[in-house]
Length: 440
Image 1 (tube, one colour):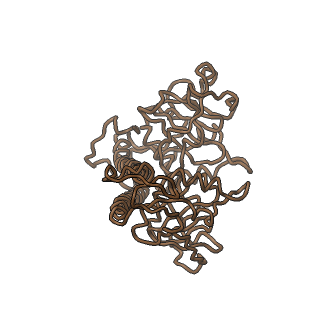
Image 2 (image 1 turned 90 degrees about the vertical axis):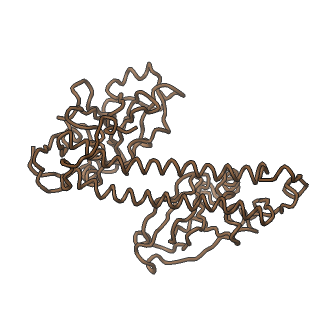
């Protein structure tokens, strides 16, 4: 035991302890176990349903507690062979080979009662009389701990940690009541972030639903009184125009050297564009990139043209610069924004961009081809009504993503101060209960 903290180089507050991970494991078999050492879990055992296997896609290094999707499965019979690899609610899972620093907490009320860790992970089942599992998650997900784990990795080409390294890690541990208060404070931010994230998902689904109703099914307000007539695009409502994407939008190429702009100018690489989400919530900085980029303005649409099947399309929430592997799409008129955004972010359009892309290993979407994509357009009053509906949703999406960024920034500033004892919460009147010590 040390009287100084490994991560923060400051004295441990009175009443706090520094314990090894090995001292925190539950008093039961396989409470702290390895995935890769002696495990024979492999793809040949995967089946369509059964016990889910947690892989790297379920873990993050950004304080996301758990990603409950993208599982593969092994049969219940096969799972019996991996007793040491089973995890359940309250267990922590660590990536131990490859992307170090990733940690997850198995949720209460998750989609499955138990899981199996893959052959590239370690687990910890904590003794809850000593440590709140969610406190431990925050401790290990703290950027300082992530960096430390990465710094002590073994291996050259592929970094890793083993069970011995995990068991020997120091944990700064306040009294359990203080742990609960720290968890309550940090969880309040996470709950707000999660609530906003759910609202974003709902609003994005609304965008495509409204678009399909109006522009594909032609069930727009008043459609009962409008007959369908022949057009070059097939049957469309009378009074609508048979147009194409190029009539409504253009590819804007404003080349710029990142060194010539403010170093903190937002930069969007393809890695920052999420799949199947028009809300671009993450970005880097211009100072971290080189070579010629493209500038864009808030409200313009970024379309990832490399491997378009990744479906990376979104609305720029700020002014900035982006990779030249993105197409910057700008509507030609104010009222064209709604239909253009909905069109280029639709499954049908992305599928068309994929089918018409050029290249084998790194297929690229071709704007010269995409401009010909057919798009029926209503008369101005109806077009304006549709556009305002979409713009209202996009404004809300932008507000929610900016709120989440601010919440994350505040939480990330508080986290190291709380788990190091720099901020004393012991005397704060904070409601705590078992229900708030675990993720839902």
